[in-house]
Length: 300
Ligand code: ADP
Image (cartoon, helix red, strand yellow):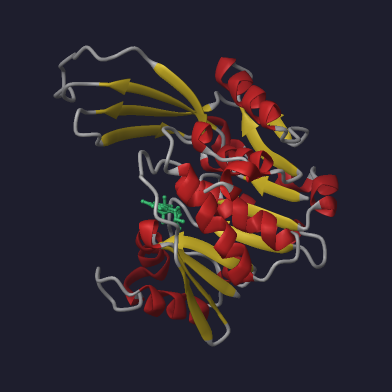
């Protein structure tokens, strides 16, 4: 089984002509409310592909929490590990302007209250998980506890988003660390690959392996991904598609990769499937609404 440990947010989206200045009020479009958060997205993406998936997360005892639980269950995710209460459900307040640029305020809410104790209370979920997949929209000490809670032989996949430097214990468990170039730069601090903003995914992957990650996958948008482990780095091209909305592509990619690794595929083979899932996800609007079924991936 795949166990996703991470965040669950309600995304509240309003279209605006322009953003308000301090003290000003502007009128916007009708409100759209979507289930989101990287953990919730990954769990839905994996379950929609057919993976046996459980989510370990925390939501509030409120309408947004119920929206998130309903969307997980509708996708077939085991929600037995979703804790309820302690703070309001995490929210992302998103304004979108006519050029498509987002401005976002996140209230982590219940996500910030997912504790190491919640991890220890979920021993049954960890015992069944062949792969544990996490991100960084929950406290780092909770992610660290998830690394420790894994059953022998179970694999740990981390998307370090939002990015920050990682403790050695977490890095040493990542197999792989899955990240885009922007995130790679932050995880590496100033020592990143080429040391600047230039594109050098091979250099960054090498630097991340040298930092202690067991393997690294750098996602490259329309160009696919770079897979690095041991002394080798391979490019995995993405199918060419008409991109409509890239929201959630990284979550879909990571979920697909984690699932396939749990089925025993090697990293390059799993990544070759994951780029197809990421590509399918950019052909539709939205995050969870854009995630493909296995049939849709095959038809791509
Ligand atoms: P993130 O959203 O985390 O920055 P990427 O943009 O690298 O992640 O996208 C993750 C994956 O989604 C890519 O590896 C690729 O397979 C797919 N993808 C993203 N954008 C496109 C695109 N424009 N065309 C085809 N595939 C894409």
